[in-house]
Image 1 (cartoon, rainbow, N blue to C red):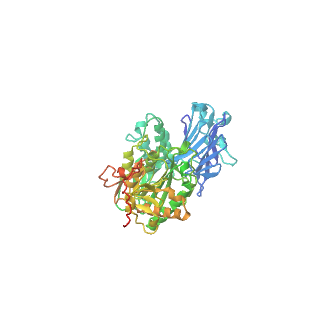
Image 2 (tube, rainbow, N blue to C red; image 1 turned 45 degrees about the horizontal axis):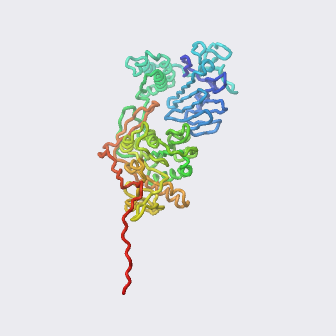
Image 3 (cartoon, rainbow, N blue to C red; image 1 turned 90 degrees about the horizontal axis):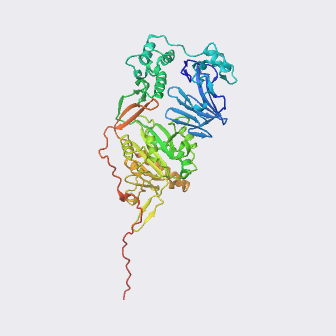
Length: 570
């Protein structure tokens, strides 16, 4: 399905690569579409390619994998004037020369945007950017081909020899297909009727019928509407009319692999033996030595969860606090995906690099909020591992601290913090640093002694002054922990023991017995499950804000016992 700059719609599929658009005046950018044949010899879209003026080539595949100059990369990446990142189901490519390409791969839809500086300078299979309708059907050299196959052939690029034929699927003629497409793009009670007078739905009904041609008619026929519906929704959104996706297009997977549709509820009374772990990593110089160790932490978690009978572990990495596009919270992809297995997450950790800037980040809570909206599974144990060196502030722009607290608590999210602070232990006479404490939870302290028998030390916990950091109560209230990364850089043996104790304590965090989950529609038009406790905790105020638990800004002079003199016997 193609829509040109001036609104001309057509259906085309070929065997080669075709130039969608190019800056012919300054050669700043170009975009091509590449086709190939699958194992059944059907023509399918292989990738979208973005060429930049710096000589780089970015290929975006339908499975979310991205290559740069033929080499696999993980997102985000910023090279010269081009930035590429993943946001939800969308791959974004933005070039400072004035090009933006946004591909919502869940619905196989790519939108190109060009700024006004390139008016009259850009053309290709998507037409000429000049507001002249007749130019959209014109080939190079001002030729007017007789049909679409000839037009596309004139924009063919590459060395391959291809037939000039249009291999697009024909329109479906089955009555059920026609009725289904009419329901959405012509019906009086259509969810898209509010936009009919603003955006003509006829081309999208034709698009729907083309998608129906390969359908097996039955109860799932409405799934074939989704691509055309997503395209119409996007077009109406660009005109200021926000529309929903059809409920049958918005699906959330249940533990038994069946699905909910948008608006449906599901009660989880017995959590599945699955875990979703999200690492939130502050990309600062203070974490440069911690980042290479995180794969060992993830492997430790995988081993401990397997010992507890968990058979399906997924891992994701969220970065924040870097420079450029890595300053705000973002997903670091693993083989192109948001969540991956323990094997694929190695690629995400390997692509993590600290920024040169080492100033404190002001968006730790924003990163937490971002992570809570990732697509976690119904019935899974949900764990957040925050790796930071900047303090959490009680107030951040667009983030409410109480909302974060309620979200973590109500959704059963366990927050565990790996911070570069050491613990302060208050003895009878002074405040002293302790080199044997790995971490704490709300009741116990954990040391190297817990390597074999995970008991914890409640007496030692009473002597610890926690850092004055607003994220610490969030962790302790959600059955999470605070561990010090200072213990990760001593002897190799201690490093291994630290990872073992930390991972064992993370696995000990228990989930509530009951969740009510709802399937909602994300900004990208796909399903995302939101699970909340069946019974919300009755105490909304955080009980762990006891001042005596946290470090004092000044050392208080503690009264000492008077020294006695030993008397000599006479």
